[in-house]
Length: 295
Image 1 (cartoon, rainbow, N blue to C red):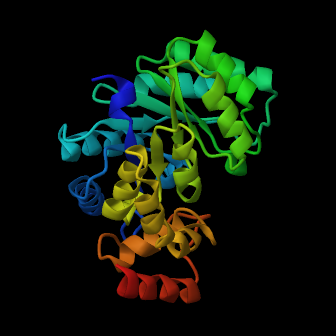
Image 2 (cartoon, rainbow, N blue to C red):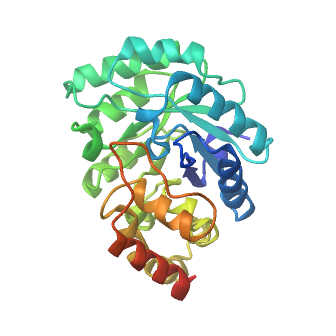
């Protein structure tokens, strides 16, 4: 099966559950992994930014990846996140983070440094050429402070063989359409924005790497499959039922929002590592009410 086929549909950017002592809660991670797979998602992403990777040390990252391989047990494909603003360091991480069972690496663009488009190009070119696995770009300017321009994405897609796709989380739909228009035929384009994913699939996206699918895996993966099959009327009906939930997920912080939902669902404890804190009590009550009334 081609990578494009394997990554068509819904991927989940997994959270990293913590215990009350802020250690990684591997039992809860197992519960989340089983929950999303059993409810129909097509693949999972470990060590994404939703997994609070900036607060994980190297050994924790290695342990989380190996544990994810064990629990997934070949049921769905796995992508591993490796990104940062030190190109040399993340290239070194390619040798330290276990990638033997991953089908690809997802790499967020450099944050804070605000490199030029040429800098972004050279960063990804160096990383992809060193990677033993195919690389998915990840454009999330709301977090990194710098957009990967459509022209840079297309340049990388055509010029760097090991770059096979992008998770596009920019809310500029014109940019998204430019990528679809100019990309190579086999270049994978997935949404990084749950709320916009239906619109993006309508003009050619292959699916979505989702935060919401941690807590709504059955509903969200159904929406995506309906859209990919061309049944947009039914997909839209179901998508609109989750609009309030999308707001709750992101209004204060991600992953604080998704962890609040998962806590109310009984899958994890509601702990995060500083500087991220749980959502406010007012929002927690709204999330609890939503789950009780809508799910």
